[in-house]
Image 1 (tube, rainbow, N blue to C red):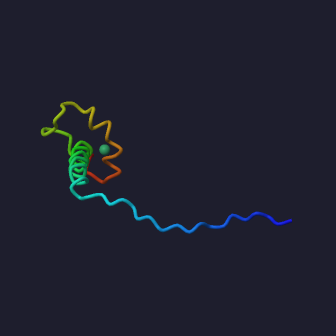
Image 2: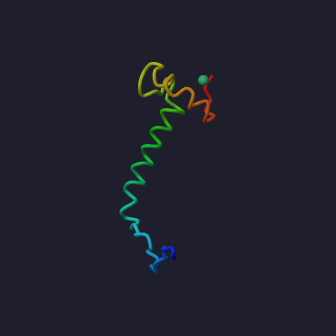
Image 3: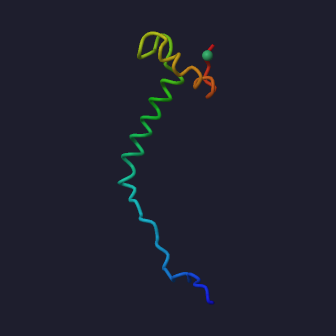
Length: 73
Ligand SMILES: [Zn+2]
């Protein structure tokens, strides 16, 4: 009794779709600015130059500040 064995089909390799740089650049700039704002709030939002008064933002990102090695206390 012959068993049916699936034979590999011959396929041509498909190249991934190319994304033009002009389509990626606005998103890269957007997320870059977003990351810089996040980095500011984690690393420098404290004291006289703080955007949001009080210590709430500092307390929320306190562990991240220590994790990233920013000076704290
Ligand atoms: Zn601290």
